[in-house]
Amino acid sequence: MNIKPASTRNVLIDWIPYLKHRALSRKGKDWALQYSQHLRYQQRSMAKSQLSPLEINSATGEPFLRLPAPHQNIIVTPPREGDDEHLFALFRDTNVADWFSSIPAPFSRDQSRAMLDQAKEVADAVLDELHTLEKESPGKKLKVVDGCPVRHLREVQENGTDVFIGYIEENNKRPIGDSTIRWGIAAALASSHQGRGIMTAVVDQLLHSWLIPRMNARLIVVFTWVRNQRSIRVFEKNGFTKIAVIEGRVVQGKERSLTVLEWRMQED
Ligand SMILES: CC(C)(COP(=O)(O)OP(=O)(O)OC[C@H]1O[C@@H](n2cnc3c(N)ncnc32)[C@H](O)[C@@H]1OP(=O)(O)O)[C@@H](O)C(=O)NCCC(=O)NCCS
Image (cartoon, rainbow, N blue to C red; front, side, top):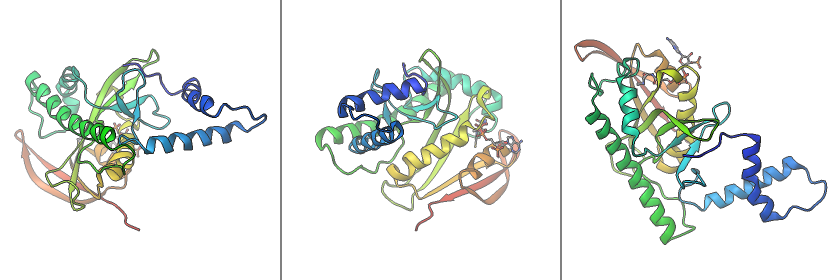
């Protein structure tokens, strides 16, 4: 995939359609003001897209979310064919897999393939639904959907290619549109990228760019091992509060306690 890291150059490239659109000629107009007008112009046109607020890679057509600075080189994309190899490597790392009760050890290629198929099924269904709606009824109100199409984290390199670094997924078992739906979140980051604030930013971005506005998420509950302070901190920093500790769970022969954290939408 070919996305350049966000940079002044990219901002300028990004600005070209606006320059063309407005044929800027008025002398002495303040650049900051012009850029903020461009952003408003871009937001207005993006608001018409059912994929909003996802951006679209102009080279490949793939939708993505970019993290804000200082993590602007991290993007979240739909799962891609071939990602099963990356999931396999991610969960063969015991520093990652040990924190999941649902990941069998050792993790197999069949399991990584099944994981990718499941992720693609959710992402493809949402993207197909929104693309069809966009095509058949352009300009319609943004539809509430029951999944997040972007879930694989990638670090964009200097040369524009990107490298898989982790995943995040939302899950639930209740009907779409029901504001009492209790969502869950699971996430994992390659050991090489842990402890840099990345997952805190990913959770924040997904929550405010997709789960709340596009999925109408109002209640999210996550479970994490009591010893997983790093994971607990990520959720606490995103406004989750500890509501319970479940003692005495035996997982893969080891007794472990679970922390339950909850996030509720603050209604005005
Ligand atoms: C848990 C995980 C998703 C967190 O992502 P991350 O990008 O490494 O986390 P961040 O860097 O955004 O934040 C980590 C926070 O935990 C804190 N932290 C790290 N180790 C800690 C420890 N031993 N005790 C307390 N806090 C700790 C960090 O200081 C930071 O908080 P701060 O910003 O207030 O200083 C990632 O480390 C991971 O994938 N781990 C392995 C798999 C896993 O545990 N998944 C979650 C299963 S529920």
